[in-house]
Length: 112
Image (tube, rainbow, N blue to C red; front, top):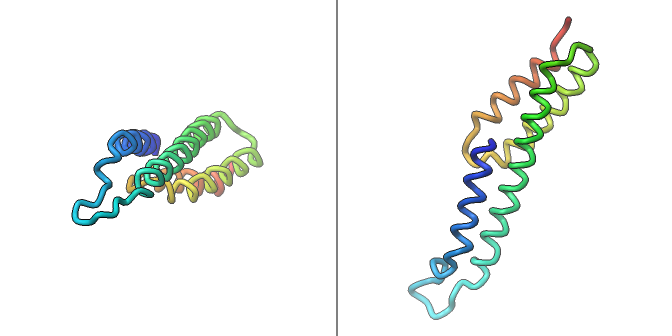
């Protein structure tokens, strides 16, 4: 998910640097709204994906050192919420979503 967010941010930078590619070639009316909204949308998706993936990495690493049942279950809930949000910002890379979902379910069902 982290790599996907970085790719989206890089693609947003490419799209923002070349607005002339969004002008319709067969019409007299240029698509002026496209160069403004496409990079902004991609930047929002990329930043949200970056935040979600960093939080997922932090809580996954934090989960490794926990031994209290309540703390493990609450961290599993947080990871499940991050997995659901990560599904929408995964941008085609669903491996991170699946691994995060499996890890959160394992944390929720963990018994010492």
